[in-house]
Image 1: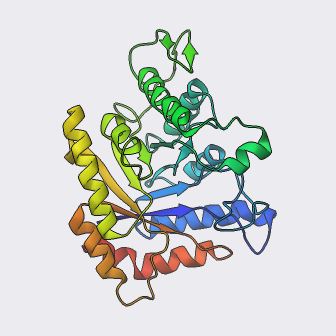
Image 2: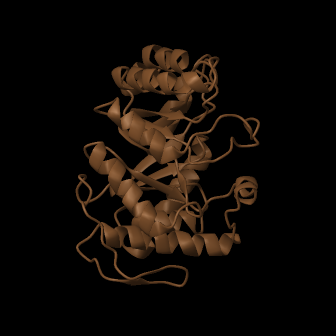
Length: 288
C-alpha cells in the first residue's frame, strides 16, 4: 500500500521568508522517506474549518512547479483544483506546463469548488452548485480534448474555445492522470467514472469509503468504464499515529479497496512531522 503527503498549511515559525526552505526540505524528506505523492491545496485563503483566512496560502501550481524542481520521483499535483478558479483552456496549459517541467510526474486533480468566502473576497464568480458541476463536466471534456490530437473548437454551454491548441503536449502518456476529488454520490462519482484515472475520497472512515466505492462501481458499470483501472485514494488527514488502532484503520481501508492513503503535514512543524511519518508510519503501510 502506498502513501502520499498533503502540504495544506504554510504557517511556519520563520514566517514568509522561511516558507520556501520549509517546502523544499519537507518535499525532499517526503521523497527520501518513501512517500509516493506530494500534493498541495488549491485555495486562496486558509479554510475556516482549519484556521484563520489570513494565514499564509500560496498558489497551487506555482508551488508545485517549485516542488518539481527539487524532487525527482514523487508524483505531484493539486488536491484538488476548484473548477471556478481558472478558465479551462488556461488551466489545461498550466497543468501541461507542470507535467512537462516535472518530467511527466504530475496528475490533474479537480473538483466542483466549494469555498464561497474566498470567491466573494477576491471577486471570483461563485455560481450555484448545479452550474459548477456543469462547468466541471465541460472543463474535463476541454482538458481531454486539449490532451488529444483534436485541436479543433469546443462548443459548450459555459465555455467556447475556437481552437484547443496545446503545444507541447504532456510528457505523461497518454496524459497526466485525471483525479476527481470529493464524495458526492450522484454527480462527483459519476464524473469520476466517466473521466478519472484516480479518485480521492475526502473521507478515511472505512465503512463510508466502502459505500463510496460501491457507488463508484455502479457508475462505472452504467457508463461502461473499468472500475478496477481507477486508482482509489483516501484523505486520512486526521489519522493519528499515536492512536493504538491507527494501523487497523489503514488495513480496513486497504481491505475495502484503497490503494493510497494521503497523510497531512502539521502547521509549524511540517518537516518534523514528515520525518516522523517517514520513519514510523510509511514503512508499516508499505508492508501492507
